[in-house]
Length: 429
Image (cartoon, rainbow, N blue to C red; front, side, top):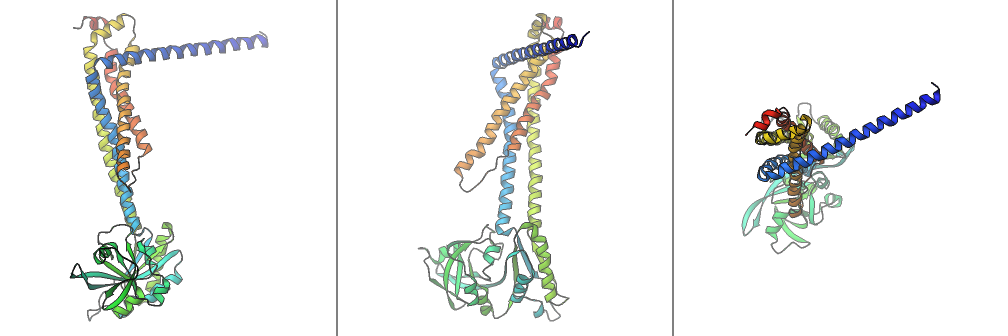
């Protein structure tokens, strides 16, 4: 056989194979179309039963999305609250034991000189500040009430992510010139100035008159668990040390320029402090990195647990599909016998029942996705200032799992229908 003849044979063979594959595909699509039509008709006959079974899939699928959304929203909220306090914040305290006289050594106390040493020696810091805490009695609502007084450096605003609602924060000039200026919390301002604060308002702190230059609040609410309470007056630290008559400070705060530098900066700050004080003094430098990591791990664990609960709901829905389909097979035994007698193969019967189960699960899954996405989206339209992340991955997983549940739990009823004996099925009453 010549090369030309061999080439013609190969071409004819390839053409015949393509034609056979095309015919097979057309045949498969025709069978699929028939199976879908039969399944749709069968489901339409039993609307109530189909609707209740679909409802189970809707609940299971929507719960997967809602649980994921709630878990992510809660995680973002908690992490946002921690970051609002100052995610890159580092704080240092003196933990030296008292001496035999019952007091801490004066040389152990943290000082403003330590602040300057940290500022000069430790790289990758955006701000450093000390704080000095105190109390005073002010007339609030026609009665004396104790308020918190805090002396800080100007950089404290950056470190603690404070928000100035009105006016301004004090600057380096105020601190260096010991200007008698202060800021008050939003809650305290509402009590002191019920008609609204205006610039240059005065307030007396420890017998001295201060000009209120601004109103502030924390970046994230700490519910009075930090050094800032609901009713707090904030002064330049240079003025506060004059009021207390001492150079010692209660804590030193710093903020790293990025999260990756927090551990290194924490160790460097502690080294500077220990180097400047006696060897027996004990200091502790901490940051919020571990708290952020712990919060993230807790949120992840809760997400996994809730997703497992949602998966159980989907499995229960799948069992419901299987039970309904088994009942359907029993009720339609004579119909199956008639179809087999007319030439329908076991494969066609199996495909029809699998298609019914799949249609229930897919339709229920799509409705569940609409519910799972619609509820948080609607809530977000009515609640201002809140972001509700809807995870795309959860939507994909919910749909895929709902489809697989329908197929897996539809296999047993489909196999049962396909294995019926045509003769016995025709006799079934």
